[in-house]
Image (cartoon, rainbow, N blue to C red; front, top):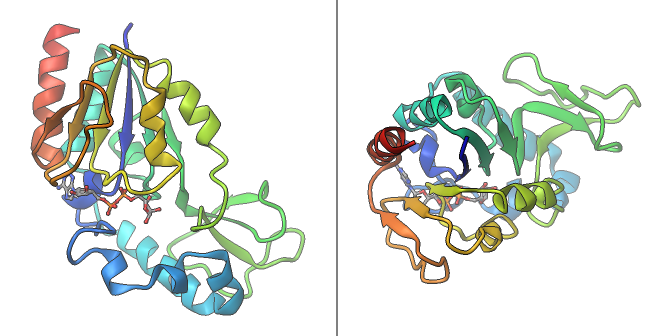
Amino acid sequence: MKRIVVLTGAGISAESGISTFRDSGGLWEKYDIMEVATPEAWERDPELVNQFYNQRRKQLYEVEPNQAHYALVELEKKYDVRIITQNIDDLHERAGSSKVMHLHGELKKVRSSVDDSLVYDLDGWELKIGEKCELGSQLRPHVVWFGEPVPMIPAAADLTNTADIYLIIGTSLNVYPAAGLVSYVRPGTPVYLIDPGEMNVSHIAGVKHIREKAGAGTRKLADKLLQKG
Ligand code: APR
């Protein structure tokens, strides 16, 4: 079975109703990254940071996967599909994708603020200040903040290197180290980028940029790949 490795970003969940970060009207226009998504912000004002993630989590319970998530599930009929997502939502899993790696953490999980290995599923959308891990420290969102290491990067790079076909969907490729994963694609591998944005992708060898929204673009590409595979 040929392997398709897929790198997804906020754009794949946009049609489900989740805001992207850097588009006009995106989250980083409404919030200051430094105020809500850094370890320093958590030190300074855990209430504010926690409220930001509680809102994101609450919204996640109100949305559903879209056509793009489902098209990737269908590809599993003929391909070994491995998803590497920068998203902290769980829409790939809810659509039914079986192999999903989260680079930037998961919104529905929380973890100890003194021991990163103590990760818990949160019941419902609200984490409260005062809720503690088994070691007695405050629980924090299980997300990678700006300035923190991305522990899954080596595994994601290895996986990227095994791709027979590489898909990139809905990411501005602005945030490293995730954006650097494309350099691990083996030379000669077909690479497709589905994103309606104007992007400079000249550094990605042989990439075919499909300038469409994730839903329609992924659906069409999946149909084509399913006919071939
Ligand atoms: N379908 C596909 N792509 C879309 C759609 C859509 N319907 N709508 C917008 N996009 C594209 C935009 O053109 C843009 O290229 O999605 C991309 C979103 O880019 P960003 O907002 O930068 O999101 P992402 O690349 O996922 O951000 C990476 O940055 O803030 C951090 O940790 C956060 O994981 C996130 C990381």
